[in-house]
Length: 567
Image (cartoon, rainbow, N blue to C red):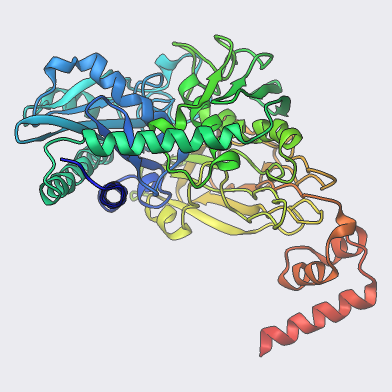
């Protein structure tokens, strides 16, 4: 049955609405705070061949772009002839999922009138997957937690109770983890129901027509955008903290008419600790960076991703092979876009932002009753993971966003939700003045944060930070952002990565990095400087020494701000 372009466009929009409802169902039913509060998830719908047709707006590019390849792995592992109605498949394979064991991906085939028509898939970050816990301390993937190969979680409607028992026996928070597995399964079912309703409404027997419409138009639009750009190449580079030694990221970005190639030759080799990145995750964030700069309006699907080709030397830190430790693959992976933008700025000037914080400012707190003396009877063991953000880099026409995660898009967790998850206390959480790099456009601010435990508890603090020694770099004359700092409240030094003991009564004091500035400070308008001072984004000292405001003008701005607070 021939259908008009308008009808196909309506159906395409309906698919996007379906996967967004799928994602929201996961948010509402998940147990882990990383899903419920931070949105560390993805959801998508695929055709019968396993090609992603639409993704939910809710979620992260690292998840959804990596998950774009995952369904093909499920088809290969399960076998195309073994797909059955009522099946649900599961894995957390870092190389066939989304890059580390803490992400569980669930895939469900959809059948209509007894015929296989497509798939739904979703991914969520699980707070605990056993092993050493979420952190960079592992020396191989075998230490990092429970590995679930691609398996049938549900076989023709029958749950594999043995697999569930195995999962429960290998994690610290069994109810939470299994609850998340059920939530993943349920949200796929929601997507399936809405898809079948749509197919009935539009009298569809399969998704072949709408699939061809989506993939053809997306591919053609992306290729046309690439072809209109300069067909040249440029190199980008970045040095970041690493675990014990600095990591060099190097990329060559080249335009070739119908595709863009990102070659990571020259990048550092494998690290002995768990900050290595499977290529699937490097590809996810490289594609995201290129799409943001080149084709942001074109929907994200298998065809719009295909023209972006990513290569890296085997067992470089951005193409780690099994059994490399990969638990904190996001620390390196989130720096991939800024490295690419260092190259793109030389090809497409005034297009990409300055460098930002890059990786999330995450930490996990493993709490337990104090061991230095008798603990109170109500002291408990608990795992609390919190996601936080530094500042994003200034843009060619706008200031950077404060305490906002780019490129991951993961939300900062509310203090209330974090403290509800276990006996942890967030003593301080506020914006960090002067942390955004100065420039024509100022970098986004980082945050101050202090964390401790309730009376009667001690804890291990698993740090997942970068930018301590290599802050975000300014672009086109902009100044660098402020670096990360980390210590206990008695001044004891702490490392930026790794599990570290914090005794009873101590706090961890953190300052998260700011984004870098864009353009020369001399070009920043006086009104913008006065506004930053009035809002507390810069201090009086910075207004004087960096921005050059006269003392009388500083006093005037402060006085007006105080009057405004009392009005």
